[in-house]
Image (cartoon, rainbow, N blue to C red; front, top):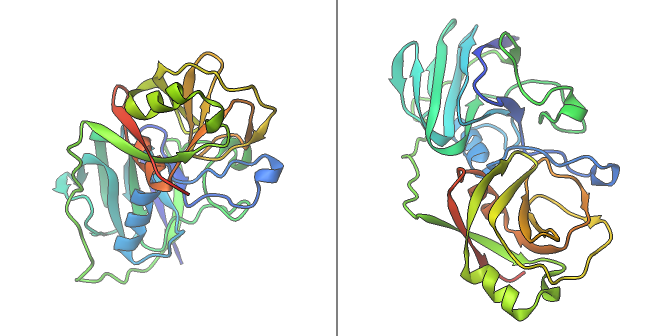
Length: 285
């Protein structure tokens, strides 16, 4: 038996995401998946779900959701005020919902991406081994008012679910672990040192495909032919712009690949708002 969740308000760019699509890059299909995989995984862990059970992802402003049968949900990711039938509820704590309950998620107070996990995951159509929304593949990039998403009916609510406190990050500049990219050694020593001694600002040119940084870096690397790229690849354009590729990025690109973010760093930069600062920290393969 299946229950249904209905969107009363969409929030902003609310979509269904899981770990993403693997094995289809040779066909030009992006990996997609949750922008902040750590918060996504945490939602499933707190519910006792499988590691790839689908969650809702929203950006900046959460949706308002109504459930037509009992279930258990949890909120992770960006810090936000949320209400169940008008009563304040905690993040990172599993919530037992009854038939007809309404969950309202306000604009986030900190960070960018928020997640709604549900017991057993959301049951949208699986395409190329993933439920992740990506418009050319799934026909839509986000949910709309009135859309209904199915989930497995039946609750095994545990009185001793795990819960955690809100993670705190008080650093003004987020450190991102990176590896040297394929073309990194083509940069002059001066440019290499500059990249790791400078801080960079998140620009307003950011989406699920890429995040561009405001400060420029002199590009003295040779031009390249189109070559494989993946989430976390940092490209350097001829104009000196650093572009960090994200979950919906293309599978090939023609700009020098100067850095490659570690998985933890992709999760971190996904949660930095416009104007936020980051710094690269070199680690070894």
